[in-house]
Length: 299
Ligand SMILES: [Mn+2]
Image (tube, rainbow, N blue to C red; front, side):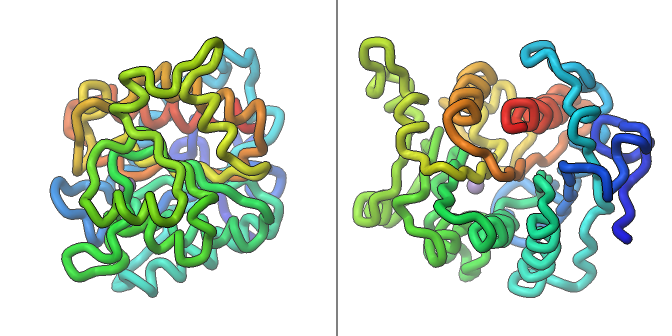
């Protein structure tokens, strides 16, 4: 039997009736893995900060007018324990855990932790869902073959994903920092990258059509979302290891997510790279509310 965290520790602070593992459709998996971050640290504290802040998020969603935890049940699992596991061994543990949950028909929400964890989570979903595309919100394209000598670096996560997923199934949004080789990889392999500067200058805006409509068009029926919190502008999301100016804002992100959910089938998602800062609550709440919003749109 899989044990779920109780009301004092689980996502949203949900009573047992709606947060038991067996009866819940949604499973929140905290993955406090941090091994390769390259600048600011603290992503290992991300999952706990999101869970704590989630208790400030209302049960009722003001936009969809629902209380989804009552409709579906949301169970939160104990954080994965990596002890001495890193790189391949850590990624295997994540893969096995997520695969088991998806196989049991759960909708899995993974909380990072550094972005490298997402390759395992995406691999598990790709194994069980056909015709899967990946929608990546991120400041960085994360397509370096390796970074600082480690191919399992958070800066290489999407390069790992492209080893098992057709790169044309990858749609990136908010990108504004990359190296020359990454730009060439995108061009040569047909990745759909929506750069922040192009979104900003109205590059995609046509009559009655916005940039996010083009994002939706590039996605296949089943969509997995990997959300690196540094996709947000540092002014609303300073609590992350590698912030970049000219980021996305709350309304742009939620508008895009809403459209994706309406036109496609979201099969799971992760929110990664939150590195909580002492005394700075708004960043944690923003991440927690993002999780709640995506769930409301997706289910
Ligand atoms: Mn990333």
